[in-house]
Image (cartoon, rainbow, N blue to C red):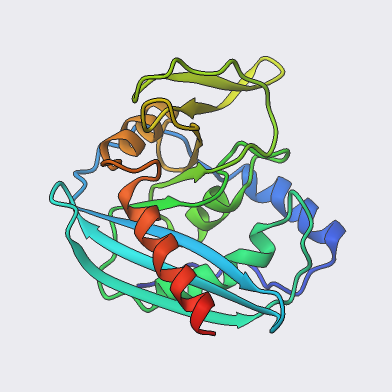
Length: 224
């Protein structure tokens, strides 16, 4: 799959923050009108002992949710763990995995934040600009923002707020189970992000694309 060449990864921390602010201006949040026939999940893990990052991409058909293709990649960690700058640590491996795909997905679900980020450029938004495809951030934990807990039934959700600005949603994907923190990445609206997250969730907490990507990258990590 073809990937845009946006910038190099050889950046200082200050440069990375400035770049996030500049790139965030290019994120587009508009309704997802395209027919979705393929969906990819993306997840990343780290082998801290070996100083490696590993990423997995899993492409599924929709609505069948049958796996069409998988790809994985790894590489040396070149950026430290700094909250708010995690995409500079994770994105290179994620992009390397996606680049191997023969099937360009219509939609990406990414284990990470979208615009629910201090500079509105979490991993899903950052990758969306590289991929030029609709991306949704489905994070297991909150980076920032306040919210009221959603009701306990699957499908219930509440807004995630940064002050008065809605930056995402806290979505119950399984009844009486911890919610996910869902936000737009690129080329979709928050309502799209919520609806597709729920559409792609079966009987687990995680949507099927990211659940399978997480399972694959966990296996890679164990085998490393």
